[in-house]
Length: 264
Image 1 (spheres, rainbow, N blue to C red):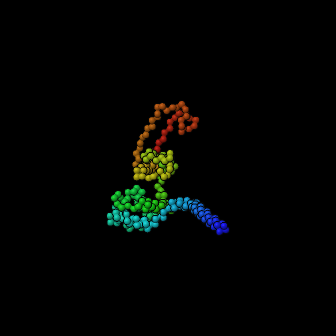
Image 2 (image 1 turned 90 degrees about the vertical axis):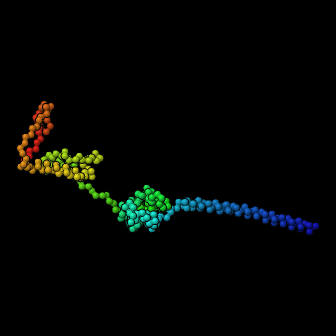
Image 3 (image 1 turned 180 degrees about the vertical axis):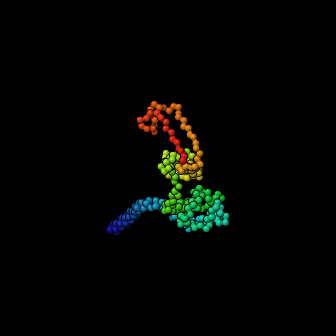
């Protein structure tokens, strides 16, 4: 009887150990996915944060050596000292920021051809799109930087007086009322005809000014060769004599006013 009970107890103990093993296994199996899920959740934000960094990473800027190699490979076949296609030779130039800044006219032509995608011509080998755009952008940036460092507003125009100023100056200096109708009309800028930048000098203007100056000098200095002359001033028939006329003495009524230059 004691032996049978012991066998049953051992069976119960064995079943208990088996159940405990199965329970422990199931717990471990449940814990492992949970820990894996927690690890995945913990790692997920890191992946989300790092992903945009990889997408938004800017490519490395091309060095001037890369641009020089691009010119030598795709440009100098036609634009060299022997052929000089379109009057352009690039085989002996240095593709550096210093050379671009010192020769802006040359590289502006290159930028125009690059931005219009006309060079290299159709049917000829071309660089990759990224290298093509990088070279054009580098040239534009270098040219703009050089222009900002050394601004060149251009040469100022040779300024002159307009017709009204010329007539007033001659009157103040010589006492002669010059006839400026022979001078070309002055250009009007923003509604004004005395803006210095718009008062340029042209061959026609110089010729007209010299002709007017001759007439003014004769009136101011006189000439013994001037013959006697008679000038008749006709009074308008509708000229009123009933009230005071402009430029006549105060207190007068009617009359006639005439302007005449008498050569001496």
